[in-house]
Length: 436
Image 1: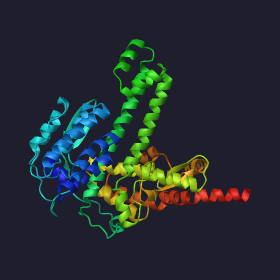
Image 2: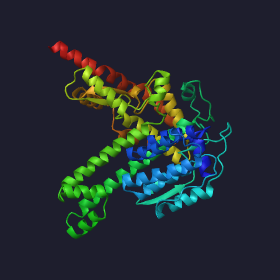
Image 3: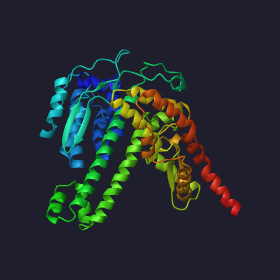
Image 4: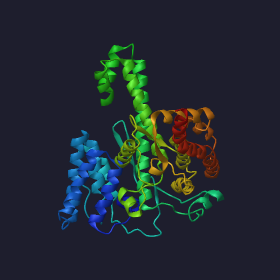
């Protein structure tokens, strides 16, 4: 399938160059850090200044400038080249060639994209949806591989309560992927891959440091060829291996938390613009985002909180991540589809228990009550470790069995966690008032 066709199916059809770039820039903002966001602003600025008379030239120049800015900001020509290529092949109409790569290492990506690129067909009702965002880019050890997209086969689940529990009802064979949902799946897959790579890297680095502790020569050689992060820790901690391992272990735990969050965020977020249009910000990403942290700060001031509030996920992220992760596993084995994953998440949202980082799934809590809540829930067995849920699902080998267990969880421990968290801090405040 043509590379540009794949991207068009995921991103949705656009009618004008300006609308197209608004769509692209929004997608890039969702999946990239600040330096790349700044680079993509170049394209928008050109369009706003009236340069749309030569849209293809704008697109090519914008892609090239974005790539160069990313290279400069990140220090990675490979990342910059990938960004230039990614923006370049997104040019609508199929008439403009992919831009020249910034480095030799990006050439295989460009060559494959150029070989398969063709005119972008219009979206139609018969166009199949795609799993995992078109070509899958995997980066390991500095190498880049580009796999072809996997065609979705729509909902395979037959579990009647789940199918009926989605708004409007869903039939086996339904196609649940919209343009916005496709973009979310792209971001989710990339995040999951990135966090897993980080976890693997940190585990291997810690293992190597422990094994080479008694071999100074090989240890020094390993550090000299290790990641820039490990090298920075080595310098900062003056070679103290225990302290370096502790910092790497912290990185691993942060990545594990990030992985759970990535797995939990299946459904697309509303943008703040969309939230303003519909008069609800419940489905906006509020976890550690600018808008969420601003709201938290306002609440801290209104409540005259000493210190700061912590964001708490009502539906525990480890719990939902384990179940969604199991569906990902079934998908990877060809026993489920991305539509089944979406079905699972849509069912949950329709029960008023959306997972992930949306405002609807977050409350702000003072540190002590927050810690006490988790301690009590774990002592009661209502909130287990993610690894416990993973083990519980180990023998599940089909979609319907997983959905049955998912529904049981939603009406059981998940519901208990959500409702307990909502009343926990008000109850704590009441008890303090009584004690006074």
